[in-house]
Structure formats: C-alpha cells, structure tokens
Length: 208
Image 1 (cartoon, rainbow, N blue to C red):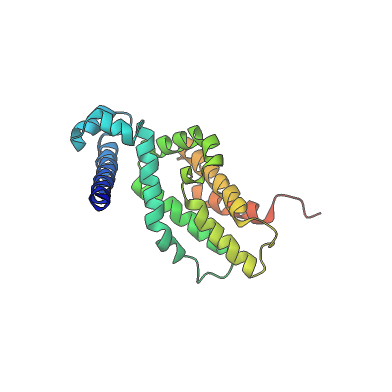
Image 2: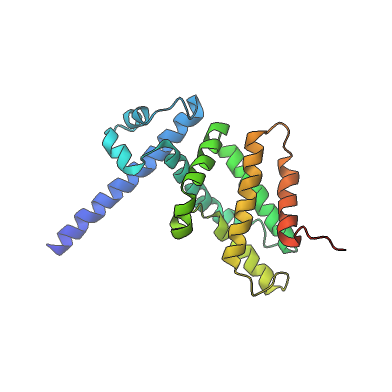
C-alpha cells in the first residue's frame, strides 16, 4: 500500500509541476502578444484548459506568474552567467559583466509591461522575502559567488558577509533598472550599471 501511495503522490506532483510550467509558458506568450494589462487570469485559464480555481491555486495574481518566469530564467542562466566571469581579471569586471548579462536577458525576455509587473510584485513581497529567502529572485546567489571569490583573492574584506553584500548590490541594481523602466529614453542604463558597481565597491566617501 505504501508503494502504491508513493506512486500516486509522485504522479500528482509531476502533473502539478507540468501544469505549473504550462501556465507560465502560455501566460508569458499572451503577455508578449497582447500586453500584460490586456491579459486576464480567466483568459489564461481558458488557454491552458484548466479551471480558474486550479489557476488560482498555482498563481493568485498575474504578477506572480511573471515572477515565477523570472526565477526560472535566473535558474536557467545561472550556469551561463558563471561562464561569463571566471576569465575576467577582478571583482569589478566580474560584477559588471554579470549585471550587464542579467539586464540583457531581462530585456530580451520581458516586454516593458512584464518588467513593471515583476518589480511591482517584488515590492509587494519585500517584507516576506526578508524572512523567506525562497521568495527572492535567486540572482543574489550569483553575485555572492563572485564576492566570495573576491574575498579569496583579497579584494574584498573577509569579515563581510557575502550574502549580505550580494543582497545590497542586488537592490542597488534593482533600483537602477526601475529608474530605466520609469524613463527608458533618457536613462543611460549601461553607464549606470557600471556606476552602481563602482559605488558598491568604492563607496561615495571623499578621498580627501
């Protein structure tokens, strides 16, 4: 009986995961095709061919779908991002290269509506994410790996928490991207990404 029960549980988990992925795939296609605001949860449920209650059990709001898609992208590109920086000479160039890469991936995979929805949702779950790291995007883990390497090479103080430092840079980068979203025509995103790394590593204290 126990084996039969385990098989049924695994089958249900696989089916749920398949439905979860199908919702994300079809929803993002609709968001790109007709816009985030114009797409409703009811339409997504109809296109996925599931009941609305089933959709709500997976994603209570549309923004949560965009967030899940973003986390999938980060997991997918983590390995690729790690190939970007090992050959670079120092922490500054590694952090800059990875932030550039993350931005280019986001810009290619998200339209402006989706980017706005993602950051709105991130702000809504901000306090929860302080307690539950599983709610975070996961990009901070990539930054933490680079910071740890900088500690090993002596560029960054070893008494600094790599995770805390990565969280700080992640938020600085999020602030930079949100400024671009607010005014993309006039905001020099690549210049400001580079500047954010400089401020993070060097601070803004006068040398005098």
